[in-house]
Image (cartoon, rainbow, N blue to C red; front, top):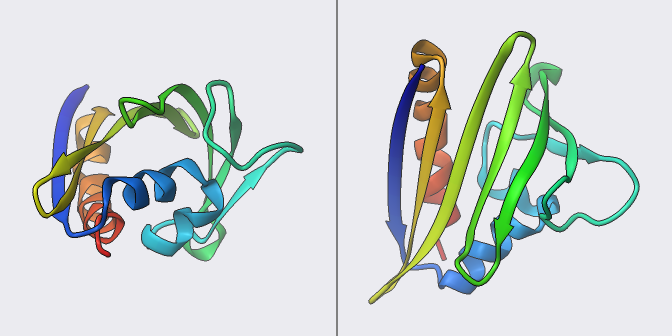
Length: 130
């Protein structure tokens, strides 16, 4: 197991960056590895206990469960499951003088975390773009 932390900064306001996280319908607009999010009945807003699947390229589907959400601190965490592999992802949005920044900490098997970090870094830059 390993832990990697990624960071990206951009000119998007903290409100816009957080909204892009908080509304699961927006995930595919900034995260190229997500084609769509499938949820059961109910809200598309992040909340603890929210479960579903993210569907990626060529129909790859990964189960998830949101563990925590703190809207005032603009942080959230979730676990993703792909077969026998489980990773924990912790996200945060921070105010910057000219926009916002975001961090992502990936906890999981080293090889998977490193490979995923390549796609995740691109997504984070898109998240904080105006």
